[in-house]
Amino acid sequence: MDSGVKVIASGTVTSPQGFLAGAVQSGIKNKRELDLAVLYSEEPCVAAGAFTTNAIKAASIVLSRRHLQNRNAQAIVVNSGCANVCTGDSGMADAEEMASLVAGKLGISPGDTLVASTGVIGVSLPMERIRDGIRKITLTREGGHELARAMLTTDTFAKEIAVFVEAKPSGFTIGGVAKGAGMIHPDMATMLCFLTTDAAVDADFLQVALQRAVDASFNMVTVDGDTSPSDTVVLLANGLAQTETINDRNGEAFREALDEACLYLAKCVVRDGEGATKLIEVAVEGALTEAEARLAARTIAGSPLVKAAIHGNDPNWGRIVAALGRSGAEVAETKLNVYLNNVCVMKQGCPVPFDKQKVSASLGDKEVFLRLTLNLGTGRATAWGCDLSEEYVTINSDYTT
Image (cartoon, rainbow, N blue to C red):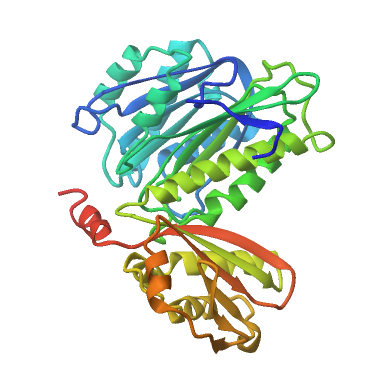
């Protein structure tokens, strides 16, 4: 990270001033796990959001987008175990009731309360359990860690970060939590991320900065190519650090810190992909445009054949160039160079002899790096994915049974 950005040990979404959170085991999952949580700012916040582009949308998405139209929010209620998707008018009423219950508990407007739900599609929320759970939630400064756990579905670990940014006249903090392990191929996918800051930020700048950060991080990761109806990224800024209002003129440090926090959380999501054993980084450079580089990198990172080859430590680079060729990006075969963990296996469209045993052994590492140089322009982008294992099939073959 930038020298002016310091990672806070054990930092989380409640590390910035004025943010509280708490979670309970309400029985939504029918397991002894936290599954319902609230995030709250003691002061009203400027807010920004990015949501799924899937045509099928959770009731929580519809509600939260409506509540964010005025660029203000003060609380988020989130549940795991039930996505509240394809549940009709009753599902919308349930989302609205969740917002109203939390607003009443906190003494704020329901319109300043956002809702997020993740889990199984086509199942109604157990509202009696949720009503009781919301009543029992206790909010604390340390509650961000509980919230991070309550969001999880098939995740194996909580995903949290907080950074302090040294700035004049006063520094500020950005915190965040995320969840996601399956149905991950965001276009803003079952991915949730909540970000907070105590900086004072202009509303228009906040939305632009968040979208930029999402495009370079969450929108460049893939686990299985499936986009979720529940994908949500929300950023709340309460201004308690008493910074000069951050905007286009003075916002570079804020943008960089937000980018780093989002990238860290996005890579955590991919590392925790269902059944995953490896992180795959795909760097594409020399494309005609940045948009084409992004398209190529995401296509390769999401290719089932590439993912399976990496899982088996197979240096079958033909799968990589085949994925590139179908990506939609402009490609000139005679100009293309391909590298596996910095070993050149193809140069100007022709195979390069390499030690297959050594490269295969290197593909057994926890992180694998693929680089493609198209030599057509200045466009460049990086995407992240994970390998495809037998465990992924096991997890998803009996998800509801």
